[in-house]
Length: 461
Image (tube, rainbow, N blue to C red; front, side, top):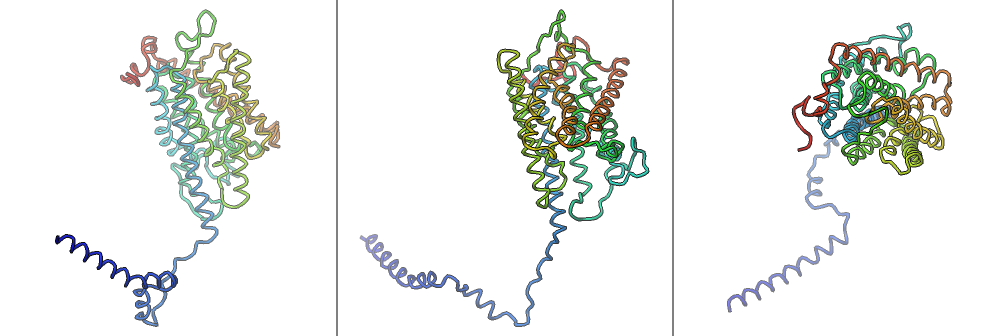
């Protein structure tokens, strides 16, 4: 048949081709370093006088350090900003499902409104002249609207754009702490007013006292990453809001505490893990420099101390809650983790690993006692914002003096003055809103849920 003859011919052709190609393959394997013919020909034909291609100028060590420090700080700013999703999950999970959209919306606006207000005036209030405030008012000063311009490039020098990104993420964190403390009964419009005031005025002014080289800085007060300046400010502002608002309907009956369970503990747990991860931008990022062995060693110590304190806080809160209530309570453990993180934030760069464990453990115990104290006082804080951020923030400031080697008297002064300032100013603001009838929603709207009454929609159908 024709196809058999064709197959035979094809086979013979393949044998011939392989036979003739084999020496070439063997030669290629034996001489792996010989240049391809095309490359050799090109070299032969190239003019002898042709100059080599111009090489890109090498970066100086100073430029490499500058690039590394600013790039890493940008990543840390992103991590801190990501913490907003953690707060949103924790606060909505620990509250009723009928208020989910309201809480998520408030967290979103904390970032959107906070970024714009902090850009406009907050950054200039907090850093009116970094490193050069001699002769300036040490309580209140203003540098410029917006961010300002950068100058020198070198090790330890930050581009003002990335510095703003990092700082504004902190401002948004301070603001959003209050959202959980006033959940379920505060008007959305009033919350926007609060958010503008806190991020534009209250937080930047107290931040200037230390981080902007104000009067507390001159006294030697130390708060590495914000136990006092960020967390205590937010926690005490939340306490003021909770007191002026009063408890949610049905939270206390006949003098007794009636818990209102959160609608989604899985969501709250995810939020805590997100916050824990975001804290590695919060604390290590506050080193503000990453290049060089000294900075690397500092960042690694900070990250490890942060981890140890968080873990110990969770265990301590679980054990104490277990002893007091007879069963382990995950909500106590979750708040214990956050308490440990808040407590270590002021001093994570200046204590040992064992001291970090002690600081986190004490914070975990304090948060349980703080939650019980609010119940005794009939103050309704649905997520424990004050015990976690206010009480444990103050503990972090004091622990910096006890364990970190800083003057305990000065630490006590700063750890009282800043929280009291935040509490008083926010108490006044919330009281004014209450007097003019713009603070709390009606009883009918509260029972219906803020998702429907304030926003006309539901998170769950």
